[in-house]
Image (cartoon, rainbow, N blue to C red):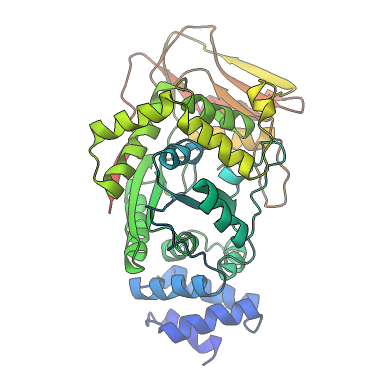
Length: 431
């Protein structure tokens, strides 16, 4: 068996066996298969695609390349959640503490932000001293003791995926749906969860820009999860606008906390609570009306807020600046005013994501440092009434802001409509 023959086989649209896929993955991880050979193999798979069976084998090879976490001794529902990436997406910081407060165990591996999309790990690590770089044993112990842990992918967790993703990133093979699906699900299948929620973003601020693309990816993700015995469901959600009013890191942590305090933006609150209700339906068969009552109870009693604080402190976070209102202190800001009366429409999550990166809140490359004070605050949610001269959004940074750099992005990021409109968040459910 050799890599050249397997590249030729894939180019000829022939299905690879389990042994052949393991040979490629293990050979690349060990260094026996060179970067240029793997790049050729990845391009062949992007062009000719993988069958479902090949995708299952690839996912399994990724999993077997590293450590796994066994939580079978925890006799409770265990759920991991993944978002395919968006702008202002602080949903994990909202719904996972709520679910944990409702006695669902949360073992989660999260990602960092890249390009216009933010990452949960970066947002959490904007809390002083908080550490998401936790080894598997510490992760397991924290889940056992607190019922919730959110960590970054370590070098021991699915190392094959890490090495292959780095190559995909520079060889125009990131967009291959089977490769995306195997990459996502291999990380979800090692955490010890028995339920997996995938929030598949769709729209101009997402990697899946059309509903058809999002449905295709969702079907692949669910098929992989079910194949490996995990109850998996994918909710396709709208990412044409930023989620909530805050885009950044520290400011998104504060917005998540505002939901736990019962003071968050209306549309964001409804979206988050509906996702929690979906999980309760899928895991416990609880109908939506009853689920919303349960959610209201953990918000009113501060159980979800305390669970979020417990998560932050368990991972070394100092929450005293949060409690004393001294957590977020950007040095510079720019206020953008409405040019006329009407109803605000945030029409480009992508543009706001790009602006946030230029302000310092995100990365263009993996090596970039993040300014956790930088970000954007939208003063209104979609379809809310605005008056000419009102501030509609604010840009923040630790460095002086030259708004002329963003004029084209700002111009196409929003519009002011003559009448109110509906902004649909839930687009499809694949299970």
